Length: 219
Length: 316
Image (cartoon, rainbow over all chains, first blue to last red; front, side, top):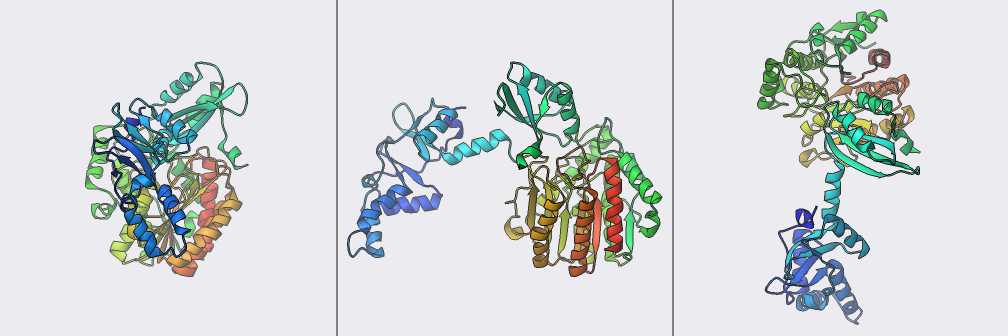
């Protein structure tokens, strides 16, 4: 999946000349924590986060005689280009959601502006957007039951499990295949659209697979 | 000794699965036989169900949904959506009779003919939402009973205690924004069990914020865990809410012998839960409890726990 599918396309941006006070209002109004700063032709110049604003106010606050009133004046008169981060970690339209997850993680940022070939900002993808994708992929909130099956790490097991489940005319709403604590084994997680899992579990066990007993998690 | 009404109708057996299915007529056959054998049937008064009036269903379900179920049955459809929620020609009428059983029990208590009621009804109801049937459920019986009590008997605040092992998602959604109905559900954690809802932060919406309380239990949880949750979560919530009547969505599938879930209650767990609900009813609403059968699929534990449930309703 490419980032375009999950990014926010209705963009809040700021010109570099806007004040930090304007930026703060925009952040509060849209419940966001970072705003791309763009030139008149939409090219990315930097990104301003709520942390950047705090960082700009902090040194000013150390000056003797600094007051709430002065802080307000400071925010109103300081342009965002003075506080923004210029070295921006971006995503491109060719990046996938996997790329975005790794970038967000490795560079420890909260958001990636998405830029096109000309360097224009076309969207933004945040940690929240990635979490939304994860919720969907896991099938959280969808009416379903969860099955966890441990299989030997050999090709064909997942296919066999899917065919057992489909023989009960039950939809699979989510699948995850991961490593398992035991070497040489993998764990397959299914979300299936049925209440009646008992006969499916029985058939899977009769085919020689191990169903994970969820009670073991309580230990 | 409390006067206990018993709502049951032989036509509940007409809703039969077209394939092997845990929610079968044999459940009710076993329950009535067992209650007869242990002499409890004679200690209750019959509250004979009638088909629920549309006027009593429409506050809970959309007309389009009722039409959909009715015509699916007439066409001879075998299921509503997936194979969970099966249908035969009789299913719509039996669903009306099942809701009617909930009404019959509620009526007996509201009119003072009985102190409490147990409704041995099927199909079950707590997964059915306003416009959708699922998880073996066609009409939401407990929701119909609650709305009936409010509309016809002027009951104000109602507490629903749902201890079926599956979250009562249908009931929760129906009363999500309604501060007059407090919905408490204790169930296996949604990460591990159908329907995948009933997380602890689902607490109601809008005016109904705070009158939904979910207690998801870890797989393997037993009597002591349930006892603690009743003491720490249900009891203080009831003290604050002060219901005028308590309805129970009584499923018996949290029993350790039940094949559909991973909760490990013993018979004693069901004795405790019933006793606690009866005590709360005595303290806050003149002892009035209407209990409705939801799930419970292992005949041995289903019948023994219903016997215990009824004994506690009679004596507690």
